[in-house]
Image 1 (cartoon, rainbow, N blue to C red):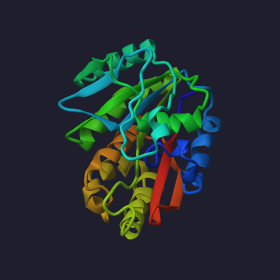
Image 2 (cartoon, rainbow, N blue to C red; image 1 turned 180 degrees about the vertical axis):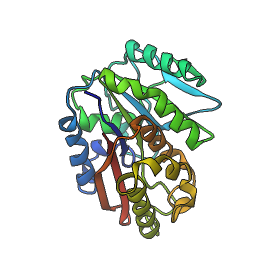
Image 3 (cartoon, rainbow, N blue to C red; image 1 turned 90 degrees about the vertical axis):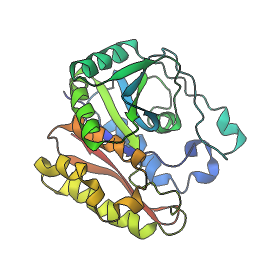
Image 4 (cartoon, rainbow, N blue to C red; image 1 turned 30 degrees about the vertical axis):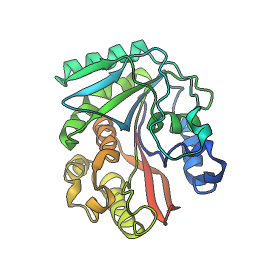
Length: 265
């Protein structure tokens, strides 16, 4: 059976490793812990498209069989800079993904140095704390074309029939200037549009609406820079015409920010 595809809101920084953050992220924790049980089988590997890895002019694909850690956050407790998530890479998945990108005419390069960033290891540590699922990261492209990233998702679709779990990891709202102050209303407005475009509206109109996301209510207040939204385009592209459901919805993070995650298929 075909694997579903996810777009997840991954929270802020290394929150699973901070006791003081557990109450605020309780709903997110439960939603991530529930993902393995929503699958029809254990994934052969996870392909993670994280908002925290950008490449210019094409895509970068992790090829290290034992990826290191990348602590790409600042101002957090000292112990969060010694976190280990020792999941292996996967040469098989890297080679297959490279083949699919090549067949689709999408420019890419292999990166043997890249480590797991917190957009990848943070949700994986909650979903699969034993780190026993091979994990490969694929970058986004820094010009943030919705059409390009939807095409990327479409190219990756065959992986779903091969036991690979595709996850786009970002945030449904990402305005760091307002997230602790005035973000409640714009995050709710944009989230309502996401629910309509992804879950409630006609599937055949979903990709067109996502391509035109800038016309959504409060779009640029929700995403002044769309790096954390673009992984959703990849997930939606890989979803084809599969229906979507909201698997995480919270209105209580930071200054009453609304955030959501979605499963396709």
